Length: 114
Image 1 (cartoon, rainbow, N blue to C red):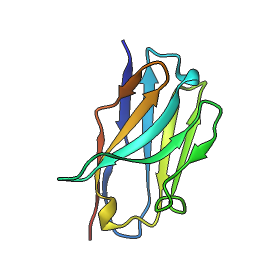
Image 2: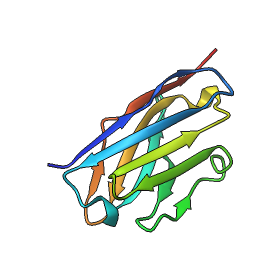
Image 3: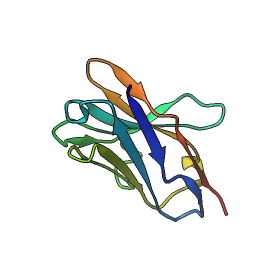
Image 4: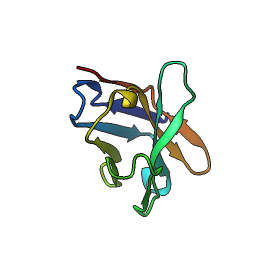
């Protein structure tokens, strides 16, 4: 059974940093591209970063300078480092794996507020 478990969310002040983790099990992690999405209240889910199975990362222009995605195929882990956080970064962040099928984690809440 495939499981993706996100962790690392929480409350952070504007300008602060946070690192989210995604632990995968029951899957050949290394062949899947991994992405992070977020969903703010009342908004559609949007992708904030994606990394290929080979480690090539891409970001929307608005995230490029503040978010860093990484992965360790041997550990079946992925991370999203976020800095200079803004209140509009608030939302539930989801880990996503995609190849022949697509899998989602349950999400972790990030709240940016003073």
